[in-house]
Image (cartoon, helix red, strand yellow):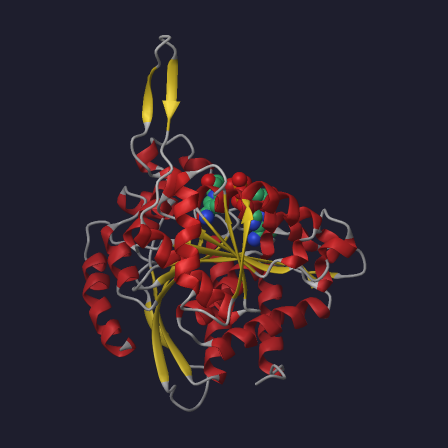
Length: 405
Ligand SMILES: NC(=O)c1ccc[n+]([C@@H]2O[C@H](COP(=O)([O-])OP(=O)(O)OC[C@H]3O[C@@H](n4cnc5c(N)ncnc54)[C@H](O)[C@@H]3O)[C@@H](O)[C@H]2O)c1
């Protein structure tokens, strides 16, 4: 399948090459093998470096993918395309049609970050962030997976007490394309007293809840088998339907332990006893808030990965941090969030769990050896830049084989 996809991708790349703008460095189409024997499986990956620290961190993740894949008989064909500010500069739009086409035809998409001061004053449709929203919409990804794990090596980075933070390992599955952010009617108006009002609608259809529920149950199955559905079913009709459908879909997953929690309680429990959670599934607005709250438990933005999945088609994998323009081009960025996003790409995008474990283990090993970029540095450790952190991960990948393999 991957081979035919590569062939399909080529016309778009060629077209882009011959476009008036002739962007030089985005059409590299190359295939890399790290092992002597030919890979048994091949995947096409679209790389979207974006802006700021994006190109620095994505090159580290790419080499980690290549090396981890080579140990598991997996080969990759990478196509690099512009998005965000880089695309605006090259083509005048934040998400060129060619970029979306190449993404759609690949097996998975790895994005670094978009945005920067240069485009901050652009009109909304010409902002880098618009390109990201268009990309999510174009790929029809409706489920956002945000893990929050407190690594023993970085437990002091958490704002919570050590005994509360240590051992936390949870995943928030957020519905991404429905609910109050998209529901209609919405807008401004006037009430009976002549006062201006603003209004939005929280609305979910059965199919939207069913499909996010299945992704959440499947995710829990890949983890510790516990799913907590968060809603406000004591007040909101949309949440009442949410709970009813989650319970209906649960019948397909008798091996998963399901619980329900109201969102106000969930917000409290996340800081009181976050270890109680394995996988959380919730709607768009609650997930927006709870996933940010959960990520702060870890205390280190440079370590946090995410995945956005649809029913079919490629998933989108990206770190949660932005383009960090304040440190861009200075070899100070922490590449580990993007490297861990590449691990999520392998696990949740391609089902290559062993290769994913290799990357996760290599990241832990690198931290165990004391290597730290500035954002996670503490006394007694070795301060390194983005490039060296990448090299250390590769060294760990080279020599460490997870015990379970
Ligand atoms: N998904 C995305 O691409 C995304 C997400 C958030 C913000 N943005 C954009 O990024 C730009 C900057 O936004 P911001 O400053 O609010 O958020 P940011 O995440 O880029 O940076 C916040 C702080 O964290 C640091 N930081 C972030 N990632 C880091 C890393 N990997 N290693 C070390 N330090 C890191 C930065 O140096 C900065 O001090 C804006 O244009 C914003 O719109 C993009």
